[in-house]
Length: 107
Image 1 (cartoon, rainbow, N blue to C red):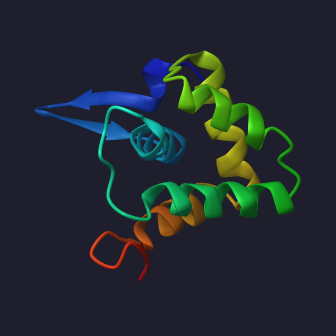
Image 2 (image 1 turned 180 degrees about the horizontal axis):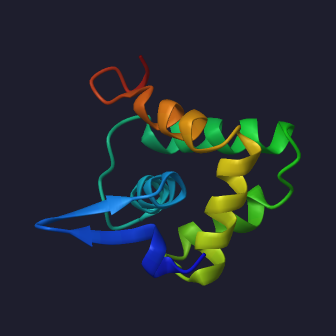
């Protein structure tokens, strides 16, 4: 699946796949120039830890890429692999939605 299929413009907004949504959150959480919501990076790390427990073996590579601000076809593929590892699209969206920015962690 190409990046164009993960970010689809529909009318005046974009429709994102679950991996694209995760990647956007993760990029924001790890961007050193952004002041992300308290606990967001830890929340992304929780998602990556769950993926790792399920067999995803490249969390450290993805974190390094995110920390360097890399946005590429490879980061998108890794986001797809993370999504698959945590149980698919519904599971990923549920995990993203579990973040509570007011409490700096899970709901």
